[in-house]
Image 1: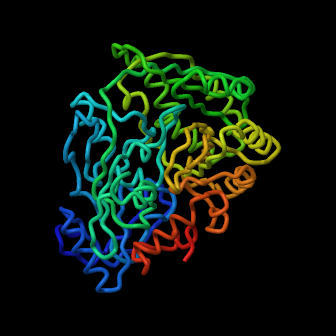
Image 2: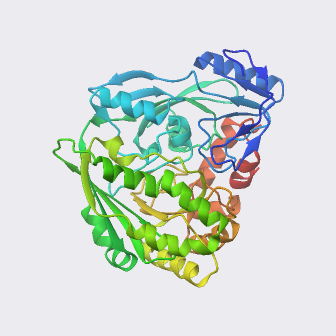
Length: 441
């Protein structure tokens, strides 16, 4: 690996977090400034190399894979400035969300909404459309008020609703196809408290009452356990505080049973003996009890994820969620599939970002998972048939088989994005096989 403007020949194979993607870059660079990044891109261009920035590797797709210049943003980290009057924070692109959240909390500030994983870099999270769940508050990318982008020829663009608005409309979820993001300005607000209510509920009740549960809560999500009629629901709403985090035993049960140590054991058994999975699912799904706790946002929204898995997620129109989910359950019930991971369901309001999965429509997300090392193709293929029948849009960082022809049909502004790509990167310096499939040549 190299530091500064110098780029060193790479001898290492790059792997993503899930182990689903590997690549062998010809060269690596770890620029410490925007100027060093621009210089590294110019050198790569002169040498005929393609280039891709990588973050923490939390994408399951090959969106960040490259055989050319691998750009590591490890030195492009930290907060550049806080504008309390304007309610914004500008942060370097390589900053992990975990560090941003804790730094903001120390300053008495918070993002309005976020996903449940904090390991990603801010640029990786927004570029692939990372989202949480929210009735009124949208994805992390939708909270961006400005960004700094270095294009293929080394030009540094500042983009906002007022400056380079066409680039701003696309680059907030840019898939790394338009350039390298070096800084992001997010809207923030004074830190607040969320009260979380977690409660088991039957699949039939959740689907029957979904509209009311969605309408009555600022943030509603649930997990359905395949092979059962059981769900675990989570409602997050603002409250006055003070903080009252989960008790030690409650936190252990939730974190270990649903997310980590015990969950790993259960999945390892299921992978070795698939016939045990339905029985385990019935026990696991009934082991969770209702609990309520209050804390600052990132401590409620996020949770540790140590168990490795593969994932596919689609956004469908919110009004199509219940029908889609019932079809998915019916498919699993009549199949010979054995699925040890719960299905996650979240929502997002419509936004105005060209390739956001919630672009122009209220959306609901259905995420299916399989334990790492377990064959997932049959399950994901069957689920994808159902999800695409409802005009589903695949998450850019999660496994799917869709191509540009399909995606152009479900994204009204798809042509706007590809035209901008033609202008900013006509030689496809930031291209790779994944982008060729999803965006076209």
